[in-house]
Structure formats: structure tokens, C-alpha cells
Amino acid sequence: MAYPAILLFDIDGTLVTTAGVGRRALERVFAVRYGRSAVLRDVVFDGMTDRAIVRGALAAIGEPVAGRDAEAAIDAVLAAYVPLLEAEIAETTEFRLHPGVHEALDAAASRGSVAIGLGTGNIRAGARAKLRALGIFERFRFGGFGCDHEERGEILRIGAARGARILGLSLGACRVVVIGDTPRDVAAARAIGAESIGVGSSRFPASELLASGATHAFRHLTDPGLVAALLAD
Image (cartoon, rainbow, N blue to C red):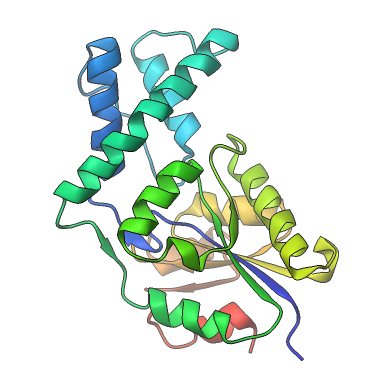
């Protein structure tokens, strides 16, 4: 019998080509709330959490980034962001699902004792907006999200614990696998003692993901061997 597994999928760059919908939605929020444009120009999104991105943008315009008022400001920005994200998704034809997503999820779902979830820096409402637009949000029963914690490793830890509860097992009895497209995904997986599968479908090639410590890495989700690595065949 296969070892019980918790699979935690990243979203942006791993499952989805976002075509900048999140960046544009946040820029619109900052334009309305702070009267500032291009505040995210120098903020790197790869592998970042939504709260960290907003905190970086606030720092860039000289707003406080620590303390109760700063946390409230971040909450307000993210609340305003979600409807604008939905609008950007509806208006962007390049926003799309990557090839191989359905096949990988189907293969995982066909196995017993596999919990399929998300491990993403997106807040849950943002993850839902992105994946529901592509018809796959309901395929993930749980997750760790950017509204759970600002640090990616802690997000994965929370998601893994939720997956273990779904399986009715202790976390120590489960194999945890993180699927992501950036070295930050790999580092976060290593921080919680999880395996990682790098997907070179975005800015970082498979070779760089392997060099950063990924357990396995593939060019894209359709590569031969990815499903076997995912399920430890």
C-alpha cells in the first residue's frame, strides 16, 4: 500500500500563468487608497506571500510596516484587492491553467490515502478567485494560505497539519510533498522537512530548482516521471 501522502500545490507559476493579474489588482488598490502608482515596480512576487508583498509596497511609499495600524492597513488593502483581482481575471485572456494540471490531480485523486491541498502565499479568497475562474478550486480540500501566516514555511506547516487531519493520521505518519516553481517553495519545504517537486514552468528552470535543493524537478507538469515522483511510485 502507498505511504499516506499530503500534496501541497503552489498556485502562481505552478498551476497557473497569472499574466500579472495580482500585480495589477494591487496597483489599482494603491492608486485608490494612497493615490500612488507603480508602487509594486520593484517588489518581487516570486515565491512571496500576499501579506509580504503588501508590506513591501507600503514600505516603498513610506507607510508604517509594523504595529497594529500597519497590520490593519494590510488587511484593508487585501480586502479591497479581491474584487479587483476577480475583475482583472475576467478581463485577461492570458490568465490560464498550465497543461498537465488535470492529469496530475486525477492521478493523485485515484490513489487512496492522498490528501490534495494548496500551499500558497495567496490569501484564501485570492486563491479561490484564481482557481474557481479556471474550474479547479473545489479539487483542493484544504490548504495553507497567505492569510494563515506571512512566512511561507509556516504556511506549509499549517497546510500539512490540515492534510493530516483529513487523512485521520498524525503528521509524522505522512509523506509531505510541496509542488512549486521557485527556490522559495523549495526552501520552505526543506524548512518543514518536506519533499519538494520543482516545476520549471515559470522564471526558474528545473536545473536551478534542483540546485536550490528540490527533491525532484521537471520542466513542466506534463514531463514524464512527474506523477511517479508525486506519488512515490
